Length: 480
Image (cartoon, rainbow, N blue to C red; front, side):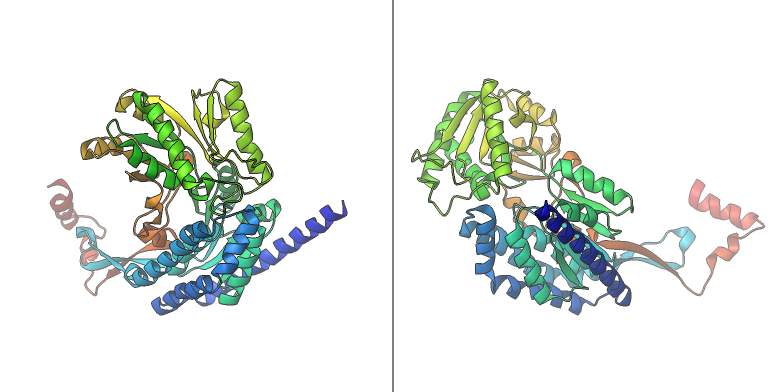
């Protein structure tokens, strides 16, 4: 009870501090509502030495939070992607800030029209636990490029990383420009209820609904980056060894704890066993051992570990065929390391078929013909990512035109997320809105239309009392 009261006081203090930070950022924005391109670029570039000079600390913090997080996965998926984003935003921000000229119609002539991209104000970013550095830095870059102040709420599931990033950001930026907030669920709820000028949330669909409801009280615009069950369709004739190798990259990264990880495989029915054997061989090649292998990432916490084990128990009880791939037959019980596992003979009443997996488990669904595979996808909520393997560009175009997904990767998995120059975002249950690329800048900007009239006032000829001038004007431009 004493510990609970102490924690409550801590969270209450954090909420009070958070509110103070918000007011400070809002006041700072009013003092400087439109940072110059030089100021924005300088702020963006500050992040590069912050990450590179402290990469060992970042790796260690993530290792602590996960139990084991492969250092090279942190370097690839957290640091390299963030540094590439820094370089991209610093290069593009001047171009994005330029006003966009627009044409005027006959009623507005003579005059000029253009669109200016104005910072919205104070942006809130709620970060998930699976890639806490990359998914904090990515939205931060877009918001800084757009000229905003930014508050970042880190996940309570990654306390070591949250505390480190809070310290690094405080050493890099004044708190009225960028600040990091930590705390439990109560802090997150209070954060989403702030009257922010834009809120970006990355996380589960169920929590996303709560975020949207909280933001609606203030009419805060929201970008939701959610998840869902991302399908992977293997074409009839695609080489299975190529498919398995490329799927393994997206599924093995972070032990499948990735919002765009392949969730289920749609495999030609006559090739299912071929896929199983190739997958077993590929996992054995990548991870000949798992227990003491520093390259094999653990499940983030016991709650998530038990959730995944529960999926397997439920599926097995309902008739699924479970294929656990543990090449050295090791006891992984005390490590939160879960072997890569295939689940076959799947039925819709299984929990694993209904919920996003977010771990090293994968369903294998047989199909007869491409249309049946697409029907299976389209009968389910629209996913964040869709993967299709086929050298036939006509088939690929058919898949693109007949499915909806937040993003598509052809003949690969996950790689599309790292393309800085195109938008990333979900559709329907997998999210709304975009960031990355120019679209990220636009998300955190107000596109303000401006019309300027010259000295000659053409509208004086169509003022009341209406007569021949107005009639001629309407006939010429409306009825002709």
